Length: 89
Ligand code: HEM
Image (cartoon, helix red, strand yellow):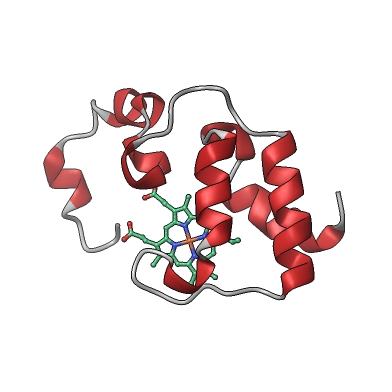
């Protein structure tokens, strides 16, 4: 993997979403959850190939959000609601 991809790899482990979700995300970066996250076409191409090659195999979560995967929800369900309301979060 090229060094360019390392920050993305840390932020978004590819196995956390299926290939279809990554395809949708990478195909619409100009409308990315309410913001414009466009990247150079070369970067999009390279990143898409890498995300696709290492994608997970579970069903796509709502809105292609990692935070909506069953895995994430069950890993975090013990965190009390009050914690998320702390200013430091
Ligand atoms: C190719 C690079 C990127 C990838 C693969 C990516 C992927 C994702 C994913 C998977 C989510 C859903 C997170 C979740 O709720 O589970 C997300 C949310 C988001 N991303 Fe990105 N992202 C990228 C670049 C960016 C950039 C450059 C920006 C800023 C310009 C950005 C801004 C956001 C915002 C604002 C959200 C919504 C957060 C929320 O309201 O929950 N993203 N991104």
